[in-house]
Length: 76
Image (tube, rainbow, N blue to C red; front, side, top):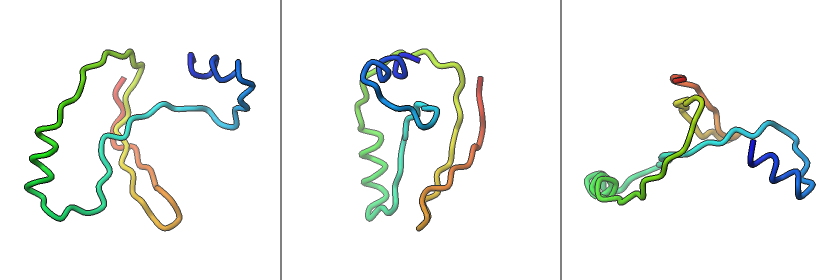
């Protein structure tokens, strides 16, 4: 809602409903799986607190025609 209100101030034309999302990972190919896993485990992430109303786990499959999304689970 805050994003939509801010965009209105700039006369941004809304052509579809915005759904905020976070992509956790997208990997096409890994040369060295052990090194990749180690790098993920060593990754430092700053903690943030946000309020969410629901959470969907979505699988994204990339195809030549674009991504295909599949809801795996919904939590609310």
